[in-house]
Length: 139
Image (cartoon, rainbow, N blue to C red; front, side, top):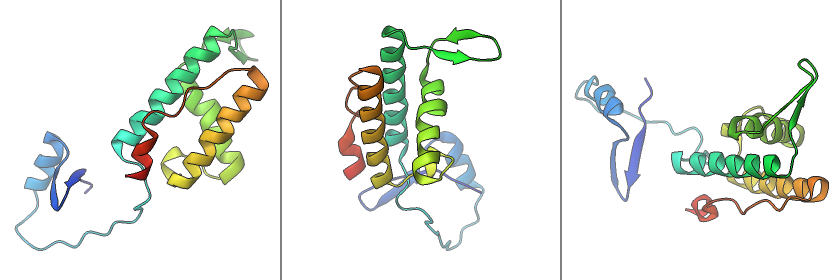
């Protein structure tokens, strides 16, 4: 069973109504929790990554850089998901040999941001906006 929790100070609470229902299913007892990846992203950090991808998609479309498909021989406008799949995930696979953004450490994400920003600036002459709420990564 996986339950999403929110930690604020020394208090921990369920992150949603669904998590509360899961928590209610547990018997009264002492449970040991094993945090396996303390360097993983929070929901807010994930939202920031998606917003950044959406901003990049807008800039690529505005500059006339579309995703070319060989099957349909057509140009497709970028959206958040296409930026994440084609730019972000391909870059992390090449640089870090990882397949998912959830596997990135905070340090790797910062490196990814630098690579994407430099690459789009050099190749497409697009000035990528700064990563939203970069201070999230330091909290």
